[in-house]
Image (cartoon, rainbow, N blue to C red; front, side, top):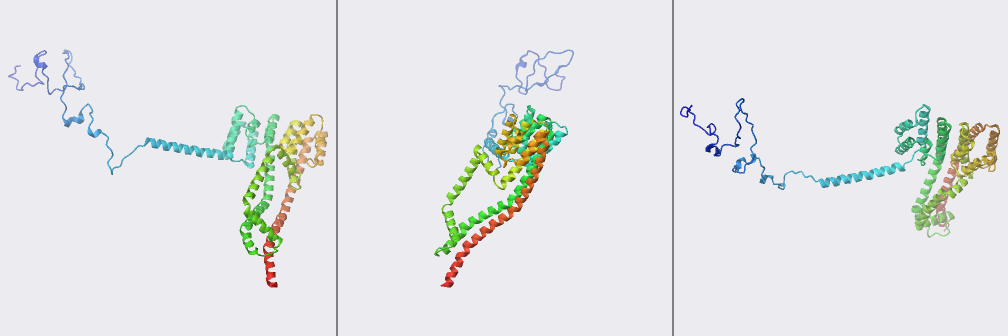
Length: 469
């Protein structure tokens, strides 16, 4: 077909250009991508794959209206960060300040945690909590539960955080291969040596459940006696404290006014002079008085906690007329019951006597019982060794122990002796409670009479002078 017969004029897109002609070298301003030369396929039509046009350095710069569609991002004034305008909300990310605040919060949490740890460690464990612990432990062991599983249950049972840590530490020590008594000795501030020795005897004899039940009975007895003694001593302690506070108030605030009133009077009565001189001493030398009280208290505690002072204080308390008798019966009750129970559980007599010495918790009794255990290995009987001090070991108890040694029924004899001294102890405590009330009333009456005489005698003396004059 010729060109004349074709009504459509030839264009650069549909014009057939011979390969290799000069017209093929002319660049097409309307073409964006030069078409590569492809071989002519005779069996299938050619498939043109579109390609991304590379950036050509010979291309003219694009108009400004097409700047946003350019493939190469060029910096524009809009991309340069500008300071925020006034009046507009801005979001500032202060990473340094945030990290500093987080560090401060962490330090505060650490301080609070240390304070909490200190308070937990300084907290105490009541006797009732230890009593409940041994009760539940004895019940679980008696039911056939392993000790580790029983301790795991007791950790969740107790509400005292310090006791939870103690039980957790006991469980960890047992998991390492330690015995129950050894794990208790790691917490000697909670379990005394007497308790650990009793538990150790139960483990060695294979009667841990029975030993724990007896230990619970001892704790119940100690708890009951402590409550009775506290109830008896609460009334006099409160009365004495309030009397001291009232005396201080009178000497500091009331007596100086009376001294101004009676200052010019001669020959004041003796109670009034004692009261005025006491007030002058307290007001003039109160700092010496306070320092003396603090020094005396500190010296007493230091002496009492020392080895020699503890022994001397124990002897002094035992030989006190009223409280010494009660303390001796408490010690004899505990020692007799534990000693007899250990012998019945199959523990050797010498070892039972050593454990009973720890139960006494008194250096005087402890030394005496340890000496008896040592002499027993040399052939000297227990009754013969304990018969030299009737104040510590009454003759009735010594005679009962001698009969028990001869008849091989020492465990039964000691159990009966424990029952007897327990009854005597309850009777003594009841008598002391009845005796304490009149003693306190007498002290209150003496103080009140002294105050009345010190204040009203000068007034009566002045009235007599005025009437007589």
